[in-house]
Structure formats: structure tokens, C-alpha cells
Length: 448
Image (cartoon, rainbow, N blue to C red; front, side, top):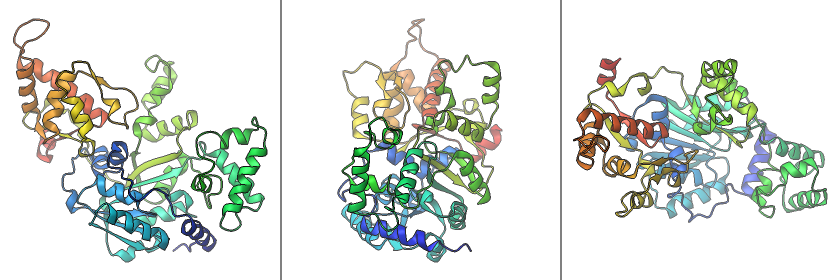
């Protein structure tokens, strides 16, 4: 077993005991932050990897590593209703706040422990989902940390972790190195050190490179936590995609996907993605996910976090490996993602007098671009799904009732045409991540 770096432990504990993280008011709730809930849901991660729809969250056990003041634990609980959740952290002060937070929001199926990462096996449990947010990049040995998480992960479980991007945060790492040289980080930074940082940057010319890159307008200079989590963050390290992939391989884990995978699409980097030089187009189209991620990172390192899902290596059969459109419409069940239900969206969808197209990007913050859709078609699809899953057959029947006449031929719309329209619309929404398709294992086997 790798021995913990005691200097790391002491410095991290001092910093988070004196300034528990994150400093979010206890009464604040992420219940309306659909993007945050969507990305924290086991439903999303399992569908992304396996093409299966998880409906038994009340039977799942989840772990929030380095839970801090419980903000991530609360998000996990709201995103996975019914799941049993355990939060662990090395900071007793942070755990006290976390307990108060979850009690305030009346979340009962959660417990907290003051526990270090290398002692997770003391819990005597294995987990369906492990969240390790804003912690892995602070640890002295990433491979060792991932190995510890793997040991308590179920065979079909999923880990969500994130690392600071070396390329995107390079200016902050330069700042940290500078302030180490100045002696500001030998002990736990406090008010004196933070004031020195402010005075230092204020004294620089505005066109000095470090000031431009690390002292811009993207954060509040008077917020202590902003300074401590950027310029004076103890043990902070940056990683590249290749380094992440190597650590996963060394830990016997497999990358599933980036959590914000839509934002890693290399096509959006080009003016004309469908008209690229042949050598470039062929190389990118034939490359695997890892190669595409590395390519994107070198061109556009614009993400603070390398936010990823990983798990035990497996060859789970994906829904993308079959053509579900060839299945009988009775065999395919459509689900609306449970984290995306909101009164705001439902009200807009069912607004009686509205006839203009609906922009889904307004309601679902995880969408990269605007997504304008035909309101009538989406109402036929979404309205019943907001209440319960539906078979493809029932949605086709509903569409034929709403639009019985083909607007081009003025003749009754036939079942084949209605099916093609509905399949295309559902496929688009499934690609966006709003809808999920459930096909039984038996149907998968007979379709392959």
C-alpha cells in the first residue's frame, strides 16, 4: 500500500477545516439546475455506457468521496431519488456542515463519515455509483486513488471523477508556483496571504501576461474561496487527456465517456466540418474516442475540468449496436429522462396558444446549441412521456390522431409515414440525451 504523503494530508486538512468547501449556503438547492442533476444521475451514466434505462434507484448504493460541505451529496440525492448515499471526507468541520445541509433539505437516506480515501474498505460496502468531484487532482498519487475507488466499485458500477486541466489552468499553476516561491503557501494560507495576492496583482501592469490570464474578470477577487481554490490551492495539479487515460489503464479502469461529451465534439471546431481536407476527415472519422479527445484538447483546451465517467472494463452491449427502427413498435419503450422534468418546461410545452417552434436549449442547459423543434410533434411525444414511459406504437397512434392528414398530399396519413416521422423525431431527442429507449435483452438478442 502506498503511504499517504503526510505533508499533503496536513495542508489539505488545515485548508478545508479553516475554509470548508464549497461555501454554498445550506438552504440553497440545486433542484432546478437540470444540467447539474442530469450529469449527477446514474441513469445518465448507465444509459451512456450500456444503453439500459435504470428504474430501480431505490435499490442502489452510492458514495460521495470528499463530500466537503455536502453540496455534491445533496445533488446526488436529488438526482438519484431513493438511493442510499454515504458521504466521506477527512474534514470533521465539513462533515458537520454536510449533515446540517442534508437535514435541512429533509434527505434521510444518507449518512456521513470522517474517513480518508485509503480507508474506504472499512465501510464494508460496494457501490453502484461513486462520485469523486474536485478531489482527484489534489491527491499525491492519482493511480493509487483510482485503485482505491475500484476496490469498492460493483462490477457494473460507475465512477464519476474530474481532474483539473493542465492546459486550461496553466496560468493558475504558474501563480501557485510563484506564491510558493514567495513563501505564501508554506502553511495554511489565510487573510494575510490573500491580501498579499491581491496587492501583488493590483501592482502589476494590466498587460502583464500572468495578470491577463490569471487575474481576469471571471471570478470575485474579494471572495476568499475563489483565491484559495485557484491561486493558493494546496496540492493542486493539472492533467492532460493522455495522462488521464494512462492512470485509468494503470488502475484497471476503463473510460466510458466525458460527462459533457457534447462539448468534446471535434466537428464544432471547424467552419465546415463536412468539407475538411481528405487526410484530416479520414483520420478523424476513423479515430477512436481517446484519439478524438486528445485532438480536441490540443486545439481547444477551454474546460477547467476533465470530467469523466469510468468503470471496470466490460463489453456491455449498447443500444447503438442494433437498429431499433427494425423492431416492432410494440417492443420499444420510450422514457423521458427523469431529471429533466420541470414545471417550466411542461408549462411551455402545453401552452394552448403557442404555435411557434420550441427551443429545447432554453430548458435543458446541457445542450450545446439551440435545438428548435416542431411544437406539435414534441407535444405529442413529450406530454405523455412526462407522466409515464410509452411504447413507440402508442406515440405513433397519438400522432396519427393529431395529424390525420398529410399536409403535402392532403390524403390520410398512413401508418408507414407516421412511423418514419415518429422514429426520426425520437432518434433526434435520444441523441440529445432527453429521451431513452428501452429494449429488452431478449429483443436485443433476436435483433442482433
